[in-house]
Image (cartoon, rainbow, N blue to C red; front, side, top):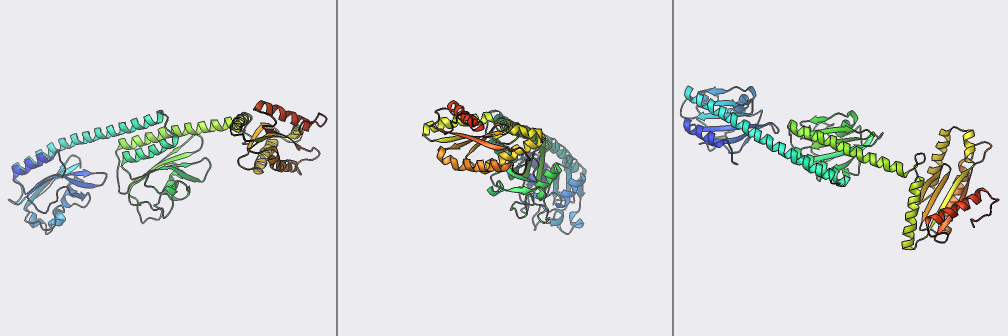
Length: 482
C-alpha cells in the first residue's frame, strides 16, 4: 500500500487499544468505493489496499450511509457470518468479540476498530476512538484541501496551455484536436468527441475525436434522430448519464453497433452558434465517474471559449466567401476573377503553358426588367450561372463580371482546344430563355483571347477581349475577333 498520511494515527490508536484490527476507510464518490487507506492488523485475512463497494460493505456501509457509529460488544452472539457483517475480512477470519465503527466527517470516511481480547471497548477506550476519529477528520479535511489545490493547479495549467495555443496562432484543426485531448485528460475519460451540425442540416459529423475512436467515424454523417449525441443536438440541452445501460436499446452514442463501451458515464454539452451551426462537446468513460463542480465549470467555460473561436472562424470564412464570390450566383466575383487571372498569367509565363479567356454577355438584358420583377431576373441569373458551370469541367474558373456578363478561364488550353467547351456554353445560352420570354429575344454574345499569342499580361488580354466583345455586340464595328 502506498504511503498514507493517516497510517501513523491508525497505528498509534491500535497500539493504545491493543486492538486486533484498526482500519480507516475513505469514500471515493466518483467510483462509489470505500478505500482502505490505513490499517494496523494482526489478521492474515485482511488485504492491504482493498476497495469495497460503497453500498455493499456490511457495517462499514451502514455507518457511512447513516453517519452514526455502530458498537457491537458481543459480535459472536450477534452474527453467524463475519464475511457478511465485515466483508473486508477474507473468509476464514473468526473469534472477533467486539467492534466499534465511527463515521469520520459527513460521510467522508469510517474508522473501524475490533478486538479479540474482550467483549467490546470500555468508555475510556471509546472516548479515545472518537477523539482519534476527530483528528482523522481534521487531517482528511486538510487532504481534501490539498487535493482541491492540486485540482485548481491542473485547471490553471489546462487553461494556460489552451490560451497559449489559441493566441499563438495554432492551426484551427490542430486546436480542435487539442481541445478534445486536453478536456478528456482533465476529466479522466477515455473518449472525447467534438461534433458539428451545419445550419439547417438534419445530420451532424465529428470533426475531432480522441485517438482511440475509430477513424472511420470522422468521415460519417449521423442522423439527428438517432443516438444520444443526436438527442443533445435536437434538445440543445446538456445530457449527463452517470451509468449507461448496455442492455437499453437507446443507450448508444451515434448508431447501434458502433463498438463503443456503453456501461460508463456520458456527458454531452451543446453550444448553438449565432450563424446557425451547433457544436457538441461530449465525453465517455469506460467506468462510472463523477466530476467536481470546478472541473465541470472549467469544461463548460472551455466550450464557451471554443464556441467563440469557432464563430470567429466561421465569420472569417463567411467574410472570405463574400469577398470572393458573387452574392447572386455563387461564382467568383469580378475582383476575385481578376486576381485569379493575374495569377494564371504569372504561372503560365513560368511554366510556358497556354490558357484561354472567354467572355459571355447576354443582351438585351435590361429589357427583362420592363416585363419581369427583379427577383425573377435574379433567379434566372443564378440558373444561368449554375447551368453554365454544369457544362464545364471542375478546373474551369467562372466569374460574374457584370449583371449579364460571365468570364471563363480555361487553364492549359489553347483557343482551339477551348472552342469545344465554348460551343457547349453557346448552345446552353441560346436555349436557356427559350419558352421563358415572349417577344424579346435574349441571346449570348461571346469573345475570347488566348495566352500568350493575344497578350503577355492581363491588361492586354482584358483590353483585347472587350474590343472583340464590343464587335460581337455591334456587328457594324470592325470585327477584330478573328
